[in-house]
Every structure is written in C-alpha cells, then in structure tokens.
Amino acid sequence: MTHPPLAMPRLLAARNAVYVVFTASGISFASWASRIPDAKARLDLSAGQLGVVLLFASAGSILGLPVAGRIVHRLGAARTCSIALSFVAVGLAITGLGTDLIGKSWLVSAGLFVLGLGMGVCDVAMNLEGAEVERLLGHSIMPRFHAAFSGGTVVAALVGAGMAALAVPVWLHLWLAAAGMLACALIAPRPFLPRSLEDEATAREEAAHGIPAQVPRSAWTEPRTLLMGLVILVAAFTEGTANDWVSVAFVEGYGLPTWAGVLAFATFLGFMTIGRVLGTGLLDRYGRVPVLRIMLAVALVGSVLVVFGTPILAYAGAALWGLGVSLGFPVGMSAAADDPERAHARVSVVATIGYVAFIAGPPLIGFLGDHYGVLRALLAVGTLILVAYVALPAVREPQAQSDRRVERTPRG
Image (cartoon, rainbow, N blue to C red; front, side, top):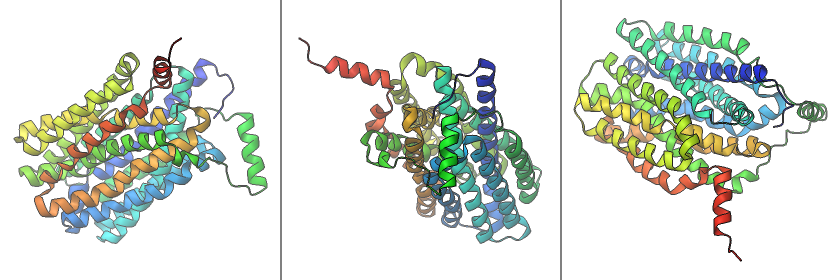
C-alpha cells in the first residue's frame, strides 16, 4: 500500500474513521456476546451444544479471512469495510430472529455464520487501514484502535447487562444493534485514506481483464510470519475464550445471576481497553517483546484467579486477564504490517491463523465444560499462554531486529 503525501488534518480524519469502525465492530460482537447466557437458556442448549453454535461465527470468519486481503486490494479498505459491516448487520438480525421469534438453533447458527463472515473481512480491512495510518503517523497507535474495539465491547456489554436485567427480548436488542451497524456501514469508512492513483489503475485494469487480484501467497512459507500468527492465535484464544465463556462461567461456576456474569464480562473488557490505551506508550518506550512478556504473565495469573478464586477474587482475575491479554492481537497485527508492500498478504495470513482459535476455542471449552464444568475448562487458557512465549521474538520491531543482526556480525 502506497499513498501520496497527506496533510495532517486528512490523516487525522482517516485515523478517527478507523477508531469509529473498530468501535462499531466491538459493539456488534458484544451485543451478541452479552446475550449468550440468555440465548443458551432460551434455546435450552448444553455447554457442548452452545460451543457448536458458536463455532459457526468462527467458521464464517475463517472463510472470509483468506480472501479479505484480495478484496481490500481490489476495492480498497473503505468499500470493503462498508460491505463487511452490512453483512454484520444482516447476521445480527438473523441471530435475533432465530433466538427469540423462531427459537431454532440452526437459524442462530446461520446468523452467526453471516455475522462472522462480515467481521472476518472487516477485521483484515480495518487492521490494514490502521497499520497504514500508524505507519504514516510514525508512532504506535494500533493498540488504541483495538482499545476502541474493546471500548465498544464494554459499552455494548453494559447495555447487554441492562437488557438482560430488564428481560428485554434478545431479538429486539440485536435488531437495534443491526440498525446501528447498517448506518455505520454507510457513513463511517468514508474518510479512510485515499487509494493511490497507481493502486486504483492496477485494480481497474485487473477488473477489466478479469485478472484475479494479485496478493502474494508466499507469506504462508515465511517462518517469521507463521510465528507471528502463533502469537495472534494464542492472543485470540485467550481473548475469545473470555468473550464467549466468562459470563457463563461466572453464572454456572459461582452460582451468580445472569447480570452478574455479564458484569464479569464487562470487567474483562474494561481492563482490556485500559491496557490498550496505556500500552502504546509502553510499546514505544520498551519495545514489543519485553512488554508482551510481562502482559502475558499478568493474563496467566488473572485466568488462574478466575478459575480458583472466590467470586470477588474471580472479578479481580477477570480484570487482570483482560489487562494482560490486551496487547497481543494488536501488536501481532502491527508486526505483520511492518513491511507495507507485504502487508496485505501477511495480515491475511496471521489473521487466518489467529481465527483458528475462534474455531477451535468454543467447541474445546464446550467439550471440557461438559466434562469438568465451564469454570475449570478455562484452565486451557493458561496452557496456551505459555506456548506464546516461544514465538514472541517474531513480533520484534524491524529496527530492533536490524540492531541485533549488527551486534552478531563479526568485527574486524
């Protein structure tokens, strides 16, 4: 991705638009996630059956991710986000219809598939746009974009807790969220960075001749890219497990009411947002790898407290868990986009690898939940966090990598 020189007001407008799209994406996800306990009860699903239903959202995302880079290359990030958010709106509407008005899990699964498809494509497009804005601004900002996502989820989770406490039907809640997503799809991405004349000419020529968009696939053969994908996979599993199961775990594991379980989910999201807002300064000062080592250790401690603590300690654990996992995904995305010329390919690859966690996570936790309880099933999080430590050097900043190579070069 190359862009002509931009005036700062134009660049800041693009930055703000990226904030809005990330926020909208977070709201759409948490609007559904905050009502998962109600949907589970409404559809009379076991933990394992719920895991299978949740799997469809991940499956939709996985199908969209590998082609998302090509779509962005052909249409640009703005149009791609508009189309993807429209799919998100349709998915939310179908999910609400299936949960309450018809009461069929297969229809909920179909809605979640469409929702996941839209979110997967939007995820790659908004991260590519955010990485390019970060590059042009010249300082770390990607975690703050993801903080906007988390902030959106916090607001939506709190709204969801209120909706659950007031017994507002799931369909009405999700249809209102769908209307908001549709409005956002039409307006929010418009100030994104302009495509370069070269990019537009290439895309027009490819479209005119029926030539497939050329996004390099060799990123799948790059060891560093695969290791970055592993970091994102662990971050996605750690984050996604909390998104899907924390509220259920608090309700079933500690015998709390539904609204209290959703409040635990909101606590997790709130501290994740704090970590992403404050993390940019830490990353610029200390570097990606040292900061992630400490943050993942905090996430490990938090997940253990959630499983083995009292209800009060479990809430503290949810806070530490959210804080500790906050930077893994955005740092991995920034690392994948370090080279602008390879950003489309690498971001698509690492995002696809990361979303494998969203496919494997729900049924895995559901299976373990059926046998050991959902609360104890969350111990799987700590195991994977330890795996991430092996791959962390892959996300080191390019300059840091260059310095290390110079230090290892024989002198004289």
